[in-house]
Structure formats: structure tokens, C-alpha cells
Amino acid sequence: MAEFSDKFVTQETCWICGGGEFRFQHTARFDTDFSNDAEFRAYSGLTIDIHECKACSFMQPVGLPSYPNYFDCLYENAWSEEWIEQEFNANYMDGIFNTVLTRLERLLPKTARSLLDFGTHV
Image 1: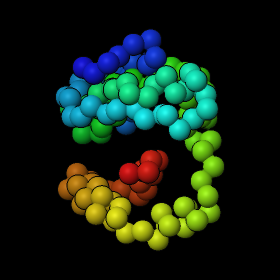
Image 2: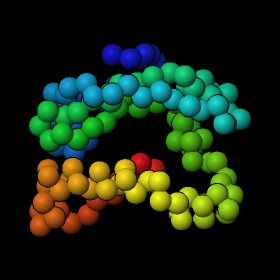
Image 3: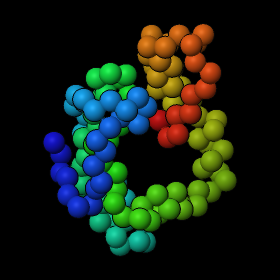
Image 4: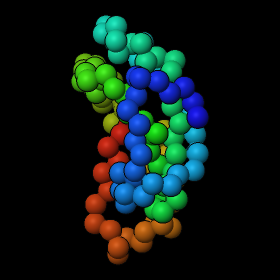
């Protein structure tokens, strides 16, 4: 397992199906240097494992940041209108989204699903 400390709250069950058995998939690195909040910036350089639920194949981190303002700090960045428009018009993410949707189709056909909220900037 990657670095795990009191900076994280362990996630013991799958957010989708409630399963409790996982397999390691990836180690993610935090990059929070852009913030003025010292406690948030303290996460920069830390790593956390991403694991896959053995029951439903959903992937999630083994823990979430324990800092109460973590997500407020993460999303407080004021992106310029130019940057937002550039990201909207850019096609470099198309391959990633197509891969995600293709894999989703293999796991769950369109007829068996109604909504997918990625909830992240994939």
C-alpha cells in the first residue's frame, strides 16, 4: 500500500455495491501545491492506492483525505474563462472518454444503465 497516515480516512467498502474485497490497480500521487492553504498543500507528494472492487470492478481510493476543507480547497481554484473555453474545445480528452465508455459498455450494456456521472475531470 502507498503512504497511508492520519491524513486519510480508510474506505472499507465499495461505494457502488458495498463489497469489501479489492485488488490493487494503481498508486496515485497528490499535487496540491497550487493552493494557499497550508494544510491542503501538505498532501502534495503523498500517494494513495487505487483499488478495484472484486465484485463490481468499480475503482476507488483506499482512503479519502481527512482534512475537512480538502474538497473546498481542491475546487476553489478560479479558472480563467479562456482556460475553461480551451478545455471545452480541446479534443485531447476524447480518447480517454472513449476508452472509459467502451469499457463501461463491456461491463454494463446501454440497455442496463440510465446515467453515468463521472464526477471527475477524467
